[in-house]
Image (cartoon, rainbow, N blue to C red; front, side):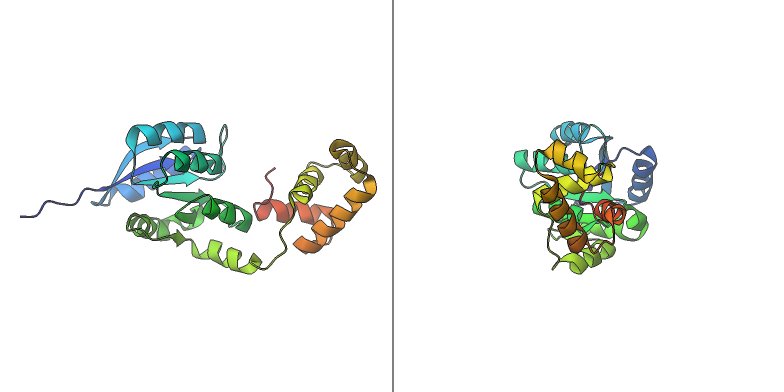
Length: 210
């Protein structure tokens, strides 16, 4: 008689206990999966990863103390073979691109965990990549957009914090004219009609965080 294959060992990282419980409940009913650890921020995730060496890590992208993106990068530096699936509330394409570039093997929206979580875990464990359908639509939709430059992202962040052009110019040690030009570029690239909408689009697409 052949031995049963070992279950897929899973680490769950999310700062919301309700999400961790939901994942644990979904996985609990599967004979081929086993939760081996939980963490509530990126720093704990790194410690748990070292201790447990899971097959799959499910990691929230936005967490206190240390973000999921930073933890992903740190874990992949230590263990390039790590298979990490990022979880997020938003289908922000900038976040998807950063996570995929940093080596994430999958990307799932929390709203679609019930439908997609188990098949994503199995697909990534089998060596495939898996991106949530809604997140892949976002990626495709913005694939040809002009990306904001690092300087424009800094300006957008300061706009979102409620600063006027003059205040932004002072904080960045540039002229007000330079800031005005950058704001025009930001509105054009994001397809925004004003500064408030630009900030909202920036947050929704994961270009900046509030």
